[in-house]
Image (cartoon, helix red, strand yellow):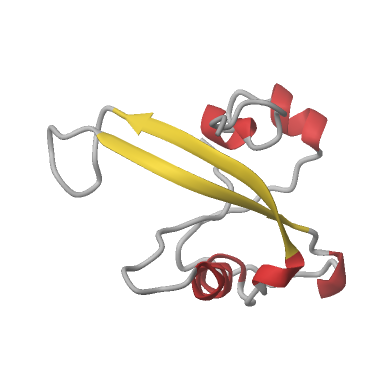
Length: 115
């Protein structure tokens, strides 16, 4: 599956610091919290865990969007975490079953957790 960039917030780490750290690791440059738009809260449920065999996982996700136009459009994306990247338009992304359904949710209004 294709996923959007993301990661964990460490204990004691602010959301702004986490966004800068994760974007640096996933995209090769740090994004400032002020340059993002909050999309909402999402829940992801998996039957497996990357830490413990036989244990399910429940992720609570705060999703943010960032326009990358200010970075000039030519990104040297790091490959230490990923072997490939793909840019898709929103209609292409929503129609592509190889994009994980949880990643498609961020582009579908009303899918997030309601307060």
